[in-house]
Image 1 (cartoon, rainbow, N blue to C red):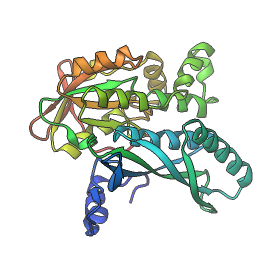
Image 2: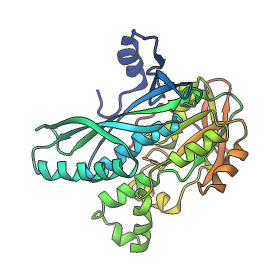
Image 3: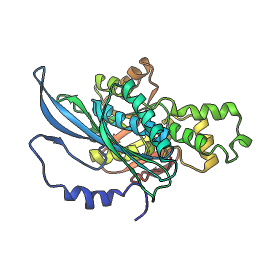
Image 4: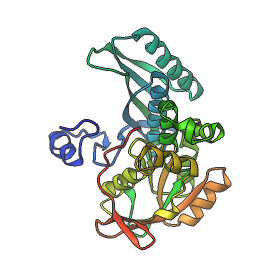
Length: 328
């Protein structure tokens, strides 16, 4: 089997099909295209709340991997209409320079947990000789009011698709940071590279998710390693719909385009942490609502009947395929 994220076919056949038990508290269990689960957990101010649970795993530089993992976990919670409350931290590390990696990863995670008021509940740390770089796995819990029902799988035919921020920005930034010695300085100015690397600065979509929920958006998906194209597929798959997206309407920065061209990477299939996709009846109103709150947003397409998931670029049309994340 190839390395990386397992295929959707394997997921359905060998993971989801094996899960048969459902308690009376289960509101939402595992499904293709969904990144969290829900449990009903009791009453608060007379209203039943749901417990959210999600997990993420990121490999690479200890400090940056910890930051990416934290934001991906928090963003998944935000896209469910909730907020991350606590997390378990699992660190899997190579044998060389292990303790400095542990300190680096935990220092970053501790700072983020303090800033966002998230409890670290515990975890596990293990050194594995098979690893050449750290793997950081976070499992988180949070809460959401029971009346709030937003998820990737709530798209309906005719819904507008709204996207925040810019495609591929964090992936391009990681390429600049990790591949600094690969000839970039001979091709691009330092100012250009600094602007491209700045894409890792803001990776939260919490404000966008909260504003989208308040504006009536029904379907939300935080974009991570799978890129914009991968997340569009996952939303459509979870909803049982098609999508039709205009490539020219997807916001993207020139620095991202040029960096991806240099490395022969597709900017719509690399990491886009902090980007939120929303499905709503009135995309123009949502985009205006987000923009007024300082979140760049644009209507990029619509959800459709049937199963066709297409990207239109002028006279050309391409079909989306199940995500297999391009790194980083």
